[in-house]
Structure formats: structure tokens, C-alpha cells
Image (cartoon, rainbow, N blue to C red; front, side):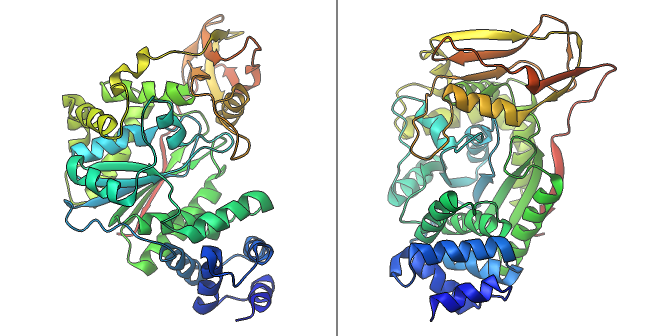
Length: 424
């Protein structure tokens, strides 16, 4: 095949054939049939011209088959994988995986690192001394057989084509493409071996999909792919205009997840119950089991098993006793009123400035720094009441005055769930 002709066809708005798409994916996986410049040009053509659902499904299937796949045969069913598109303060995986495993599901998951304002699960877990985030495929399967769950960072053995294409997209301005995002997410889920996939699609100022129409388009594209490839997929579009829960920052978020597993109420627990209930319903199980394992302590016990299995030096419930950031200070409300807005994007950017996130992939992350958000939309706040608590590595202070807005009269809390779609 002629690589230039493949690029030109997409540049001119034509559909690439399944054979052409496989040629591109094979090149990304290391065949040498296209140069990096040609792969980047094809990605840009996709950004500008798009892909139809058949093309996107073919791309997803080809990327899933570009490396090894995880064979979960012999492990208890159902096999469930959960994915979040990322957001500010999103630590749902730390709660949801042990919840689902405690309910009897088998969960094997690959997670990523954070980039920009959206934090990564791997960074959060690496804030816990000793926690191993690089498991081999064989270790994942063995651990999931023993305790029902395993989590690892992304490995080049799975979907290597996606790894190459994503690295190119990151440096060529081609990340924001719905066909490329959808195929990247679902190819890794297919390679991970799950037969039920639950997607938490974040929408708002603290997410990649900032508007509801964008989020719905991505969700509908994923459902279209799943239908064509015979996947069982459920998607919940969830609110990310304000940070999720109280904490933004790696170790702080692990501490908050432990609190939820120990029974703490709030939006984080509510969202985990919602997401977990949907996953159980897709598996043909009672949704009421989620709250039951949280309230009984079974989910916490499963989380402690998980941390021990992956080498953590401390129990999850003892992470709160680990060292904290050197400096902390509070930001108080300048006036009384009802909280109308807590801008997740601004809070996320401030957390990155503190060192809790990275601007580029090679940046170091400080596991101790972060922000506690002490007010949420719909709360009544009095003048002088703390609304942010900053955990910092230096005495330099963050200005978060524009991230929060107060109004009169009373304003309602934001909804957790903005939409639901499934293949059923």
C-alpha cells in the first residue's frame, strides 16, 4: 500500500478501508511501513476530516489486536473493566475497584498517569510507599485470581499501536479527536479482556470534554463502536464543573478514598454507588450490593487486600498518617452567600502549579501537595469561613479567588449524572 495515498484519501474526506486502517496500525506498532511524520499527518487528517463509525470500529479492533491481550479464562465471571475519561479530584477507581471485587466481580484494569489538570490513578497510587504499579500480564491474572482485582500502569505489550499514536498526538495537537479518543479508550479495554465495560465520561471545566454536546458525541461514538464489535458497554456522563469530592492532589486523594471506604458520606461515595450499581446491573446482579459492601466494611477489607498484594508499605486506612506537605494555609470566603460555582478547571490548574500534576509527560510530581476544596456548589458559606486549604512545598501562595463564586439567593447543588447510554 501507498502511505501517501492513505493520508490523501483521509485528507480529502474519503473513508479509509479496513485494509488501509490495519496498514496504519501495523506501522504504529512497529512495522516500519510509515514514518512518524506520515503517522502524524494521518492523525491530523482524521482530526480535520473525522471518521465514520465503521472506520472508527475498524481502528479500535486493529489497535486492540496490535499487541498481546489478557486472557481471563478460568477467573470468576463476570469480568468487568472501568474507565474514567479523567477529571479534577477523580479518585473513583480507588473506591470502585475494591467495591466491585467485594461484590464478586473480577476487575483487571490498566490505568494511566495524569497530564495537565486531570490527575492520573497511577500517580495517586505511587504516592503510597511501596505500591507497585507495574505488573506483568501474568502477575495481573494471578493476583485477580487470588483477590478479584489487579491494576497496572499501561504496558507496551498491550495495544502498542495506541501507545505510539497517542505519543504523536500529544506533540502534534491531535489529541482532541473523538474517533481517536474513542478508539484509544476502547482498544485498551478490549485488550484487557473484560466482557463488561463501564465508562465514567466526565463533562465540565475540569474534564477533556467541557460541554455536554461534546460528551454526548463521544458517548454515542463509543456505543456505536461497541455495537459493531459486540461489546457490552455502559456509559454515564458525570459532572466535572466542580472538583469531585474534597481533595485534589495525589496522596490527599488516596486519603479521601480511604475515608469513603470507611463509611464517609458525600458526592464521591454517591458517584461510586451510582457507577457500581450500573456495573452490577449490566452483570445481571442486584445494584443494592454496592451500598451493602461499603456499609459492612467488605469493600475496605478488599482494598486492604489489594494494597497488600501490590506491595504497599502501609494499609490504605493508615495512609493518613504518612508525612504531609511542608506548608499549608487556608483561603477564606470574602463574603457570605450561596456557592454558585467552584471552577474545577481553575482548581486543577492551581494544583498543577503546586506540583501535583504535570505539564509534560516527563515532569516530576510531588505526591504531598494539593488542595482541599471545603465548599461545594449549593453550600451556604459565611464570610471568613475557609473554602480552600492548600498543601504546598513552599510558602508561595496560590490565588484561587476567581475559582469560587457566591450569590444570593439560594442556588441548587449540581447533578451528579448528566446522561446515560448503553448497548442494551
